[in-house]
Image (cartoon, rainbow, N blue to C red; front, side):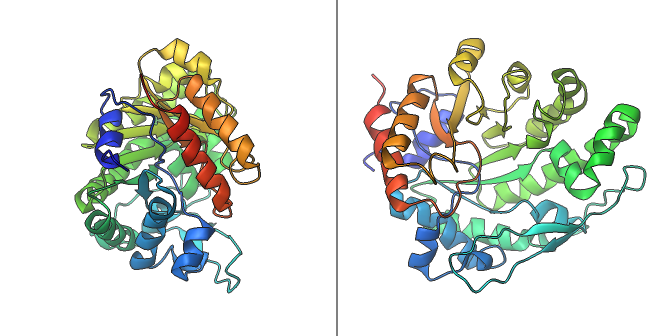
Length: 344
């Protein structure tokens, strides 16, 4: 790229005007195409820092994608707190099975106690992610934005305790849930500080457990928003808040979170959001599975064109890019972004 992609992406996230629409993500964005070029299997890249970094960088190297992001699965934070994660050691290089939670810390919020490990940098797979960030910063960090992400406090709480109980107790025992969310903010902010120290240029917080189909806007404002504000207030690099699903009912509340940018998925009415929020950095909002992975290149091009026309400041997926995405669709996406994303 003629322009320095890293600097442009970070300028955008800081709220500065840039002359084009970048195409990047703060969530998982590795491809099977890239893994095959590296000779890696999908199950290997979650536990090996070298392979994690190579996989994250490959989407930039092969397609010009404007970020390199680690980790790739949602178990890192919970595992470091003592929850158990199941890994799938599949030999089939085409099989995509993510690590999943196999045992939570507690069944009820009454039983749950969040204990931050004394040496957090050595807990669970955190050292793997930290080393992967250092490698990325060293090897591609001059050219492309290096990022990491954590689940939001409410969503992460649902990773370590029975989700049904959490939702029930969010109404019945709000004081207790608030206390646990305070503890989770302490944990997540400490973890993010390690990621930033290791080289993360920006941080995405994924609070999909608090989307409008799960919590009402009133409950989001009362229970979730204060803890997001506290978490974002502690992060020293540019930040993105991502919530999937139909977020139009809470988008005005998301804008109060103190995140530098907001990410929405394909269920959000992007034009309506742009009109409602005005000059907020807005990222979105293509369907990373149905369109990018399973659509035709022409479908991908049209979707990207529409996202730009409806007000996206950056092209960004509605969720993780599914690794089996065809190379021709990745190429079509990047070409469409360049074609339609130049600013006057």
